[in-house]
Length: 203
Image (tube, rainbow, N blue to C red; front, side):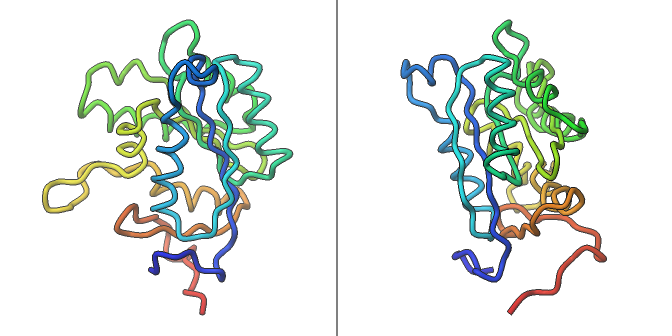
């Protein structure tokens, strides 16, 4: 697949939300938004319109931002980073469930499986995923390295997959909820679809 997005592919609107009290007030530089856009920009072949938000750890604000990105901005996919631990200010999963039509707990289960390869405290993470309308909303970890690992999965020294990343399931999920057909670069993340759901290559 070409490194440049093909204009024959569906356009995709992706909301990226970094949730941090300190980064949102300028105490330190936000690294969540660059990490999300860098990985997704490498993985997704489609032309992407980014809709970024940097906000504080406030449940009502997070929920309002997710509604705005889906209902007003028309995002097909929204990814959040931060606020998924057990601390009192970690309320991203609660806010995400506040706006959900359906929960997809398998995404969070797989993210924890990946992170447990590195740290036992991964069991404290509470990431989840939900559907709102025709959009998929995913909660991701807060660290750039963990963001890439959970999206891409883990490979051995020969490049063989050890643990599948969650993004492999995202394009087909978006197909099923009525969103655009997303294609990925296999060397970054090979999307999985049943054979009956694969489109013929477009000229």
